[in-house]
Image 1 (cartoon, rainbow, N blue to C red):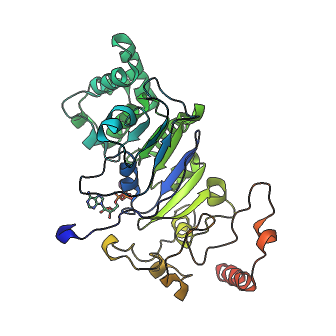
Image 2 (image 1 turned 135 degrees about the horizontal axis):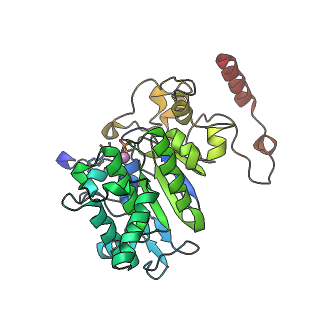
Length: 342
Ligand SMILES: Nc1ncnc2c1ncn2[C@@H]1O[C@H](COP(=O)(O)OP(=O)(O)OP(=O)(O)O)[C@@H](O)[C@H]1O
Ligand code: NI
């Protein structure tokens, strides 16, 4: 920033993504979702800095014909040349958040799709035409619009063109940044189902979305971001069903849905340049206490001093209640909450 001030757009983001798995990354506008995706692809602006490690391992995934040597790549330190030649499009596909800005304005959608097919799969001429049309169809892009230029497309059509481009390479990892923006509900479902099919054969999908219904439809696991941090990482069935999210912010996100309580979270997220030292959500949280003046360390998938409910049971192990037993304080807190809800 101006004056040499540095801002942490994403901090301590730790997660893994297995072959065949879909992780949905959700959270309010500005929480850092797109910055995280851009960091994985080496697409941050030149003045941005990254630290830590992001390993892409092709072992076990469905590697395309040009997937390089199939070994592990350290994405945060890979050279621009390696990223451009072996990672982007080939090992990691991207559905960008602003498709209109990523499509080439002076070429038709068909030309861009065919070029991508030729570049990523080596298929030539008539084969490229058929593959391009197949990719368009998978993304619900109407074939009679293929000869249009990007400026002749609606927002939703540009979105589908970008999705088609991202599907061409059948990359072992697909990053889809808000792939359903501007689409009607039936198209959302069609797109989401097609993206889910991408994970067949052991490909992985990181789906960034505001649309919690789309996340519920597609995800195996959910990561919730708030003010640049992942505050909860949970299995999707437990998160969307019972027992529900454990972080108060994540509960608030679900409660804000019209088909649920339709109750917005009060207040606004903090400015990244003015984050508190402790929990960034405390100012909006009805469970906050003095303990929240310290930054909560993630434990059992949740970064909160007062998570709701016990940690999830380990598969095949004892239930968390048996393993630890609720403390008296936890129990009375739970009872109090139940009484308030009632
Ligand atoms: N090039 C940049 N220079 C400075 N700040 C940036 C830059 N790109 C993003 N940011 C800031 O980083 C933060 C995270 O932005 P990001 O785009 O990742 O949010 P997001 O979670 O993807 O939001 P949305 O859901 O609106 O897409 C925001 O506060 C944003 O203003
Ligand atoms: Ni974004």
